[in-house]
Amino acid sequence: MPEDISLEGPQRRLNTATATAPEHKAAAPAPEPSAAEPGDNGQGWLLRILLGWHASFTLMGIVLELLLWTDGAPWFAHLVLYGLAASYVTLGAPALSGARPPRAGHLFLAIAYAGTLLLTTVDDRTPIALYLVLPTTFALLSPISLAVAACAGLTLLSDALYLGHHSFSAQAVGETALQNATTWLFAVLVGFFVTQLLTENRRRGDLIRLLEENRALLASAYHDAGVMAERHRLAQEIHDTVCQGLTSTLMLIRAADASAFRDPDRVRERLALAEKTVSENLAEVRAVVTATGPLHLGSTPLDTAIENITARLGDELGIEAEAHITGRPLPLDATLQVVLLRCAQEALANVRKHARADRVRVELGYHPKSVLLEITDDGRGFDAQQVQGFGLRGMRSRAEQVNGAVSVVSRPGEGTRVSVEVAWEH
Image (cartoon, helix red, strand yellow):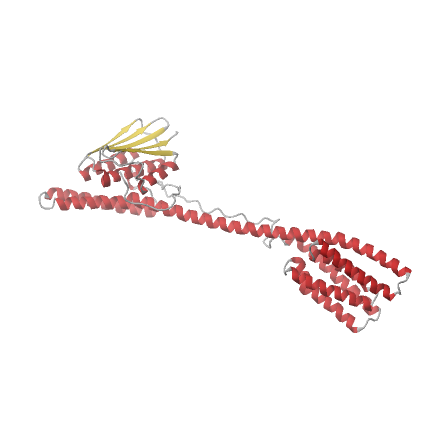
């Protein structure tokens, strides 16, 4: 029973249409970000710390401005301080939060170093700005060796300017040493803490972005899988209904045409069968569209449906076709009934199209833990190892969905036996 319809591409397992409307699982929604992972790429939890850091810079600016006014510093010193404030707002703060690239932070540090040294030349009390400039250096410069070198250079230059104000006196040297010790201790502790926070923040942001990208890819994959599954389901249903019905109708019309002049009664019989087949095929198409399940199972049990389609094949081909039900009929669920009926329809359609058989036997056997469907014909047979068309693959796919199996035994000239066995438990 070779197949005349081929379908390229991988076969996918999917849900069989049942007697009720099938339910297809929608693409599983990707998990929403939790409270610990807000939608701003993980930076929300760092906001309060950065706000505190910005407040410290603001307070330091106010203190420096008061010192400059108290000491009567020249007007350009105030401009330098205002320039430092503007550079922090536009460069330093965005670089700390990650809103601007690292080079913006480097530019801010260059401005801050120059401004701090310039203010130190004007007022010997402005080196207190190092309490914030040095920790910021540790936060914005990497690797750590570069940050240490930059801080050391700034400290030495600031010390030299400070000592120059006091003629390198012993008291000034002691004050400078004490200030350096406290400044560096504060800078190392705070700078290291802020650096770790920023590093962790960036890592969390990268991780969340990666998770969001994976979630988008997963949602797309679910959607594509759903589309392919539905497409394959419709292909199977169309093959099992429209294609088989059209093939049967075509054969009936050809038979009627061949008997048009010598046997009018046979012509009317064939045309009546063709009309019935087309009507049933139309109803099957409507059932596929509305997802109400196979027409033959609408109001009849599986046993009767098997007997009806077998008898129909015998009437269409004018051959001996019989169906036998063995065992005690079981209350099968709708999914099992659809699988068995579709497999029977496909096997009989192959007999109609390819077998040229004189006798067909269909047997539906109920066993304690399984149901066995066998379709046997005495037709011309085929090489079961070489021929694997869409119909046979579809039968196997349907059977696998209900933990069943399909076996085909056939040799050229020796007929064919198709067996479909599905597990069943009450």
